[in-house]
Image (cartoon, rainbow, N blue to C red; front, side, top):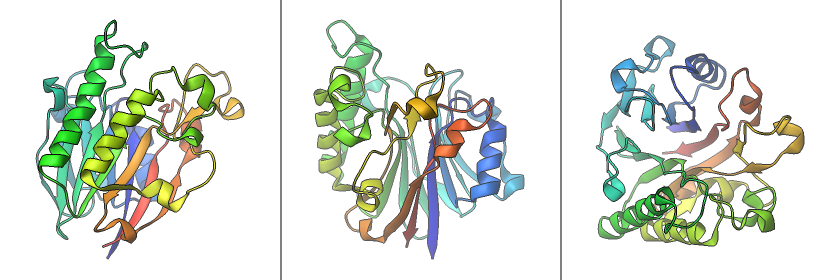
Length: 260
């Protein structure tokens, strides 16, 4: 049976519960993975009335937080605390068909791409190294990885490659760390497998007066799958319109369907 999955950095699930409801009603993904929920689990909104009775989440007050909402039965498959940050940045769930879904919120990394003067940038690199080492040691299979990975890896994943080479999220060292994690797990970038050519963005800064006209975007949000099921992924898309909803997140949801 095919199922559709979406990933979205919601930037406060309590503040934007109405937007989540709109997405669930209008788009109806079978599974929705949220990042930057900014809430303890017990205070996260309940979306079961919309047909999503299953939720797996890790939260903390005011920061980070990840959640998996599902209308398909799903069991908690744990979490990892890479770089020992003590942050709610990863949670996993396992569907009845045996597919494990990993939901990640990789650290943003601050403003200066130099770990010597910016602790947050070092934490980001260490987090990615932790992901790489985990995948090396316990190579995943029949798995999907989604989330805000806070890196736009390709030249056409940013509005201006040359200008962003020294900007956190597109620096060569970050792209290399992400590539090592991807290679270690045998992950396939489903979005780019489906849409291989041309600019593709999922994030636009709040600082732009007219984000759509300026279109200075970056593809920070990703859907990956292990090689054994990657061929089952299709129908990838980014719901750009959601960035223009009232009081929006600065991220747009990313979708993919899997025939599994």
